[in-house]
Amino acid sequence: MKLKILQENLSNAINLASYFVSANPRLPILSNIYFKGEKTGLVIVATDLETGIKKEIPAKVEKQGETTVSARTITELVSFLPKETVELFLEKDQLKISCGKTFSSLPTVAASEFPPFMKQKRKAKGLKEFSFKGELFFNWLKKVSFAAASDEGRPVLTGAFFRKGDDGLQIAGTDGYRLSFIKTQEKKWERDVNIPAVSLQMLEKVMEKDEEVCLSFFQKDGQVLFSQKETWVTTRLIEGEYPDFSKIIPQENEVQVVVNKEELLRSIKAASIFARESANIVRLKVERGKLIVSANAPQTGENKIEIEVVSKGRDTEIAFNYRYILDFLGVVEKNEVMLEFSGGLRPGLFKEKGNENFLHVIMPVKVQD
Image (cartoon, rainbow, N blue to C red; front, side, top):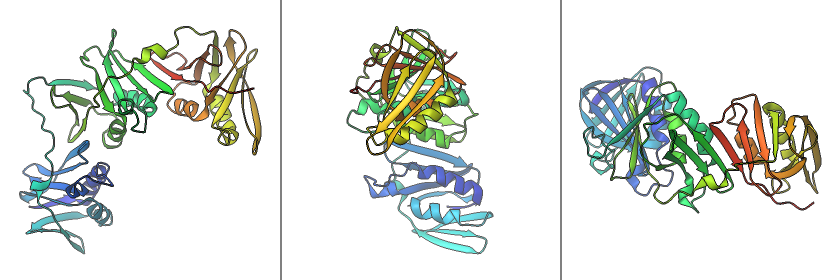
């Protein structure tokens, strides 16, 4: 293998690939990044066996070939190279790297030991493909994937669940304490799949938001392939039955509050100073056109903020983990949010005002007066 490539292009591709290199790999070879010089340019691959990335970069390839090198070493090295043309040359078991007045040599491991990347078989039996506008697709992910569970206690909850609804594709994420749910108008969706939320969050780091994203599923191999221009990302689907989350979405509520997003955000952040010393609990009290946000802790003190709101229904009080409210507000795009409650022991419903396709449910915290 012998090729020339711009330092900026090489560094960018290696940095993206490094997201998919495990800190504690199951196999030593997974600590490496795969390089292959082809007629069309340089191909870079990294994987942890659960997720993987393939990236094609323009390069002047004088001699084709393939090898693997330490991901950590080459990532750090290339970042310090001058912004000039980099030459990569494979000589026996060493990868020679030269750029400007910098010359390096890295030990390699045979490419044959590296796991193959999932192939996109266009005519494969059972192949299903769906394409979405990148801006739309990543907006859905932003509003759903954060609510998935982060621990492996219940693996099925660590994913974002994509299902065929009556009116189009629906996406949900839940950790058992909160639920984020999106309804879309994409009617072509045909199957229910559970995609790891961490993989979707990784996807947001390595793909362009303004380019179309294609999802390819193969009926039998339990994987999904995301593709966009010269970037491909693959991940395994989560097996197991996803819970029927529709049962926890409140259908009727006794209290409805419309509040300015920024005012609520400032109030929750202020209350969090006290709540974090008391199990993260904040209280929301609806009282005659006011929303009172409060928190207290024996050692820190107490805090109370009143916000003018538009409210309907009776006075009520309910408590939540403040982190869940902040997470919701962090993905809200509208200026106003709508809160709906039915007493202190039933789930609270959180929405963007004017957007009926996105809702967030948070389970309340039972507190003693």
